[in-house]
Structures are given as C-alpha cells and as structure tokens.
Image (tube, rainbow over all chains, first blue to last red; front, side):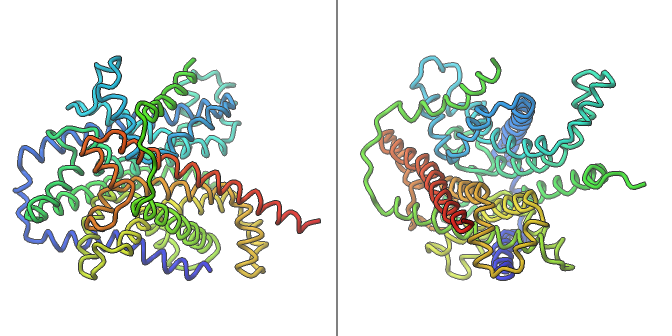
Length: 257
Length: 233
C-alpha cells in the first residue's frame, strides 16, 4: 500500500519543482530590467506590506488564542475557532466584500476596494488565525508544564516566563506557519482580486493579469516575477531554518552530556 | 471579555450570508464538477497522504530524508507561481483545458498538507501501537485499525483538501482554459457581472459543501466504529 502511494505522491509532488524548472528555462535570456517599472515596484511594496501585516497579526493572535485555550481550557472557543476553516478563501473574501462595500453604513470608515487593503488584511487574518491556532495548540498540548512551574518558582515576570518556558518550543511551529502563510498570501489572486484595487495591485493579481491579457505577449514578465518570488521565499526558508537549526535540534533531542 | 470579542470577530463575517436573498439553487455543470472534484481529490488525498505518511514512519531507507524534504518543500512554493510553471509543463503534454489537468493540479496544491496532517496524526498515535498492525493485510489494517484510529485526521484531511479545492479560481481558469466550470469560477463571473444574489448563491454552496461533507463523514465514521466495536463482543 505505502510503496505504490509513495511513488504516486512523489510523481505529484515533483510537478511544482518541474514547474519551477520550466520557469527557469523560459526566463533564460529574459531582460530583467523590464521589471524595473513603477507598476511592479509599487506592487512589490504593497505585497510586502499586506503579507507582513497579515502574517504577523495572524501569528500573534493565533498564538495568544492557543495559549488562552490551553491555560483556561476554553473548549467552546476552540470549537468556535474551527468555523473559519470551513469557509474557502474566495467565499470569505466575498462575505467581507458584502459587509464592507457600502452595505453597512457603520463600516463607512473601512471600505472594500481601497488602496490601504485593510479589508484584504482582515480577510486573511480571519482565515489564517485558526490555521496558526491549530499549528500552535498541538505544541501547547505537549508542553511540559514543569518548565512553566519552574519559571514561576523562580519568580520570573510573566513575559520572562513565556520567554524561557514556552517560546523555545514555539519556534518550530511558528517558523513553519510563517513561511506557509508568506508563500500563500504573497502570491495569491482570489482575495486581493475581489477586495483590492486596480492600482497598486498585489503581485499575484498583476502577474496573472499580465499573463492572460494580450495573447500572452507579456507572459515572460509574469514567469520572471513568479520565478524571482519563489526563489526569494526559498532563500528565506533555507536561511531561517539554517539559522535556527541548532536551537531547534536542541529542543527536539535535548542536550547530550 | 477578550474571548467574547474574539468570538464576535469569528462569527461576524457570517452576517454577510444573510444580507441578500440568494437565488434558488439550480443544479448545473459547475456544481456537478465541483462536487466531483471535491470527492475525488478528497479520496485521493486520504489514500496518498496516509500511504506516504506510513512509508515515512515505518520504512528505513537512505532516501528517507530526501523524501521528507520533497513532501515538505512544496508548502513553501507559492501555488500561483508554481502554477505558471505547471501551465507550461501541462501545455506540452496536452493537459490544458482538460478535467484531468485540473484534477492533477488540484492534487498538487492539496497533497503536501494531507501528508503532513497524516504524518503528525500517526506520530501522535505512536509507533508501538501501529507496529502491532504490521502483520495484518493492508485492507484489514486500514478498515479495522487505521481508519477508526485516525477518524479525526481523515476528517481534517478531507476538510483541508475540500476548502483548498473550493478556493481555487486562477488554477481552474488557467489550467482548465475556461472550459472547466466550477462554482468558484461562476462566483467570479457573477461578481464581475454585479449579480449579488447569484454570487451569494455560489457563496452558500461554497460554505455548505465542506460543512455537509464534514458532518457526513462524522456520521459514517460513527457507524463504522460501532460495527468495528461490535466484532469485539
């Protein structure tokens, strides 16, 4: 059973890498200075802003909720947090669009399709907090409470207790979640296309539009951006995992004497 | 108080579902395609996710760390970016505009999550307990031990794959070349045409499908486990 499914999985999982290889092949000889347009530069800036704000806010709220649920055994909150997971991103985006597109006068100060992309960020935070919560709550479930008790016995301040007794164990799930969210949010189409604006557009929206308009004449620009962004994220993943490898290994295996 | 605020934040977007009356549901090709993709991709994800996780846990091989990385790294490749590359690959072999091509890329986007979920679940159940089933035939092992033990994980895998499949617009539009309609592609058309009632009808379908599937699986597993427990008496 496992061997046949492994081979089939390997075939499927090789496809994205083959895709990246073909992107490299297609962009050989591409004039990279073509990407030095104002439209791409502003797109990069707004993408970084939306991605970083959405990811960091989701990580902070998700971790705080996991900690609260763990400490206070709040089971009703745990069940409630599953709700957004049943809603596909595109449906969530449409629900936020309905609420913030002028239908509710109360929300007049925050609108869908405005240049600060606040509703895009709201939507991502609403969808990603339960994901972070799930990634972190498992770690809290396995946490040795002795560390927290020890920190309390030593009369450390609450922040210091968190720093020494919880934070080291959260590095791995938070690092995994961070890069999954960055990869997902930074180069997506569905949510920003519904809730964003026509200028500045997020990278995913702009790249898809450049690819599909004008008989694929600008396809190479989109391929180049997709490739550069993938390599940028890969470098970030490798660098952050390499930098934290020693510490994570120590947490996973313990100190050898 | 803070927990109550969080609860309000979680619940409040659902108000959008009741802002306008959706048009009455009509069964068309897009709904049938969507349901078919959800079921097929969900089933294949459970099969491949559990099989691959089993191999990673129980097989000693010098390729193991490579396979682990190969199952892990696609999570960090932006779906849309790899899709541009896969578009070129699939165009070479004539899969653009076909149901198989769309199904294949939907599998590519969901499988890494499923393998990780299945692996984590098996890791938590623990090797000693699972090792006892190694003497059983694969079918007996799956029916009487693995599925009942991994009830929650199977449901989560199906939920994740369903929600990811239902979220894909660009992927279906690009690889399906506009020839494979789904509820998601119809939602964008209704949105672009400013038809709020029709768009809301599609949103209802997109929200209801995962909920119904999750509840249906729960009922199925309850019956299944009752039957398995009945063998003990």
